[in-house]
Structures are given as structure tokens and as C-alpha cells.
Length: 374
Ligand code: NAD
Image (cartoon, rainbow, N blue to C red; front, side, top):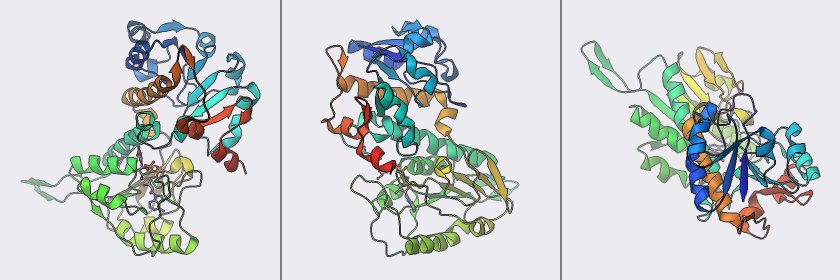
């Protein structure tokens, strides 16, 4: 089986879909990798490293012409004519956010696999690209906040006086939120977090943070997949009001709250921002999905009432070396799982593929993507 790795073309995207380490792993399963020349440069994985790992270097057309094409962010439409008949394209394809983007793949007869839709089961854990990228984003969000905050994170006792530690609040304690908590604590901040899922409490406390309890009478807002369900309007209004008091007491608020396939829930109003002390920092990791804060400008840094609101769009791409290595492991694991006798086996009865395959045989076969298209 041959896998092609084209250079990423999305603006600001510095990751590469497979790393030299992943190439080595795949080689052990008799999978050969063709890398477009320079594809790894922005991730500090040069052509020589890929060659040393046993990859073949080629042109873009060469990489695109393989039976399986591994990408980070999918392919621009202009590339589709270069795909082989019935090719499999793997990537972070934003299936529930941009479900219309799959028409062209279906027309082309390509099989698309959205890494975001790999189920969170024990068997699929090694293919969990979302968790890998959320880990990077949670870590980076804290570094951005620490750099922006006009204060120290740690408690300091010096001849020039005692500095009180920064107070950091995380809203949404999923994978990114938990990594943010752990990182902020390592820097010496006092950490707290809130989530609508009851199961989050134990995880929050396990990384040394305080769990913020709000009395919303919403019960447990966790769905069967382990994701959060949307709150109703009344619960949402009470949540925002109850959170405002907590937000006002913190120097840094990092928001990560997402509901799959829906706009990000709104957690901080402009009044909520105004309640914070000047110099405080909000990092809104939900910015690509509209943001958890009313003052967020996706992709920009906004200022409101002396508070900085950062709306980064893709923090994982800003730390491309480890982000690529982690992403590549998940992609390689997926390929290894389904590569048998030199072919990539598309099997819509398999529970992982049933969840993650979006187009196949000229149609959109994914139930969730179909319903996201309305
Ligand atoms: P996510 O990125 O979809 O959302 C981030 C967090 O925001 C979630 O914890 C969610 O509960 C929370 N949230 C949503 N609406 C909110 C609101 N109104 N207020 C406050 N918080 C809100 O989540 P994720 O990081 O992808 O994780 C989702 C779940 O999947 C978690 O339970 C996580 O532990 C689980 N998970 C399981 C596996 C596995 O078993 N292999 C792997 C990764 C994650």
C-alpha cells in the first residue's frame, strides 16, 4: 500500500500529516509513503529526515496520485483532479462544520475519512486525533495567556514583596481544558474549572484544580458519546449569570466549551468581560466555532474594558513539530488498522469507519454529516 503526503496549503498551516517516525512505523506494516518535497519543512521535518525514514520524495502530483492521501486539513478543490480513482483522503475535514465541502469529493468518487469523527472508544483511542490536537491547544492557550497577563502566574516571595499567584479559570474541562489546568498549575497559578458534564469534576480535581459548582438544575448534560448536550435557553441564561461572579474573580479565563456540530455555547457576555479587572486575559479556544465570549473576534486579539480577548483559530498549527508527530501517530494507527494485503479496506460495517467515513462510492454515507446538511 502506498500513502501520499502532500504539502498543506491552508493559510497558517504548518503541520504535516505524517512524520518520519510514522513513516518508519508504517514501513513495518509494509506501507510505503510518498512525501511531496518540502511537505515537512514548516514542521521542522526536512526531506532528508523523511528519506532517512524510508519515505520516497516526489512531486505534488505524485503524492496526490496514491491510493491513500494523508492530509492535515484536507485538499483544495484544484487538487481533486489529481486523485487516483477511488482514492481515500484522510484529514481533519471539519465534517460537521462544513458538511457542504464534501460534495466535490463525492462527485469525484473519493472516500473521505474525517479524523474528527473517529469514535472515542477504547479500540479507536490510538486514532484519536482530536484529543491529540486539543492537548496541544490547551497547553498553548495557557502560554499565550501567561505572556499577555501583566502579572506573574506563580506565588513569589521576594525582597521586593510578596506576589500573589494568578487565578486561572477554565470553562469546559474536556481534553483541552484539562491540559490547560495542568499547564497553568505547573506555572504556579491557582486553578479552577467548570463543565456541564458531572464526570468532569473528578478529572478537574485530579489535576489539582477546584471544580466550580453552579446550581442550574440541568442534571448531567452528557450524551451517550461522552460529549456535552446543549443547555436549554433558560439554563443557559442562568449559567451565564452564575458564571459572571466567578469570572470577575479571575485573572485569566480560558474557554473551551463546544457542542459537536453546533455553534459554541455563549458563556461570557460583554458585561461579564467588564466585570474583570483591567489587564485580565481571556483565551477563547472556541473561536473557530463562533467563540464562548461575546467579545471574541475569531483569529484576532480584541480589547474590551482593559481586558484582552484572544481568539486563536488553530493553536495546534502554531506548535507544528509535536502537533505533527502526535497527529501523524493517529493517522498511521488508522491506516495500519485497515491496511490488509496491500490495500486499504473500506468497510462501512466497521464501527470506526461507520463513524468516520464521510463519502464513499460517490455518495455522502455519513449519517451525522447528512443530518448536519439539513
Ligand atoms: P469538546 O471539545 O467537545 O468540548 C470541550 C468541553 O466543553 C467538554 O468537556 C464539554 O462538556 C464542555 N462544554 C460544552 N458545553 C458547555 C457549557 N455550556 N458550559 C461548560 N462546559 C461546556 O470535548 P472533548 O475535549 O472533545 O471531550 C469530550 C468528552 O470526550 C469528554 O468526556 C472526554 O473526557 C471524552 N473523551 C474520551 C476519550 C476516550 O475515551 N478515548 C478521548 C477523548 C475525550
